[in-house]
Amino acid sequence: MSNHSFSVVLSKGLCGKNLTRWCDHISNIPEVGVSVADMPKISRGSDRKAEGKKAKGGKVEEGGKFVDLPGATMGNVVVRFPPEASGYLHIGHAKAALLNQYYQQSFKGKFVMRFDDTNPAKENVEFEKIILEDVKLLNIEHDIFSFTSNHFPAIQGYAEELINKGLAYVDDTEPLAMKEEREKRQDSVHRNNSVAQNMEKWNAMKAGTDYGKKCCLRAKMDMQSDNGCLRDPAIYRCKDEPHPRHGDKYKVYPTYDFACPIVDSVEGVTHALRTTEYNDRDPQYYWFIDQLGLRRPFVYAYSRLNLTHTVLSKRKLAWFVEEGLVSGWDDPRFPTVRGILRRGLTVEALRQFIILQGSADL
Image: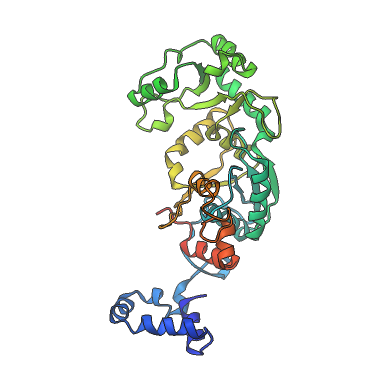
């Protein structure tokens, strides 16, 4: 509901005694009157037409600024929402899901619902069910449903392609030492190993041998880059634990940064929306795409949603649940989708809140 509409409802005495009394109290505070007078006309809601903006096709859209998606054509836009099944969806996830839905509906395109299950340690089948229920609560319908692990054979094939091209190498450097080398922009002693040596070590990783478990597969990018994400990032790690969907079939798992561009391209995603925290990883995303000769999706960054007086970290939220300090993940004090709705916010109000922010990257 806009400020103008609310003012009309308030003037007709339809807001209830308590809310009306509170509004009267606030409006009679001199400082509030001064602040409202100094606000731009659009913020006061006095010019209803100024709030909207003309969209393609002559439709008036209310809310924040939504950027035009490069190369987007009606009926051909494919977006995706790829959560990790390690907790309940919170309002930050809701923003990602609803922004993707906005573009999908605006261009009459397709919405891909994909679980990022590249880390068996974090993947939880129960959370998958809960997330699907949360997405349903948000009135979001997907056109395509998938798991990143559906593409594990292809992703492994692409990793081996990089090895054979001399663009990836197996490294057994200790994690802390590797971190220090990357900070100092110092090459690993294994960086220039032969393809044959790397394939031998890679096979040890896939077999899950004692030696293989000490190794990781790194992309050979640019160790002198000012962008730390390009300093030979790890793209595969050994994890000797069963996967919820594939059991003990795999001993090596791709990182999200390696799997994501591959799966986006293979699944036909045209526009990948990511928060600005991924900006430094965009060159990495396109490096994988270009070196493997894959179709290029367009990556667009939008601002991450930050709220005060609460936490959005799944790890921290889980602590509250595990310590019994809240009634559960749907506690009305929680910023989870279920908590917010249980507190009384409607799905439409949440959607309008997201739309009012737009997709600006500020």
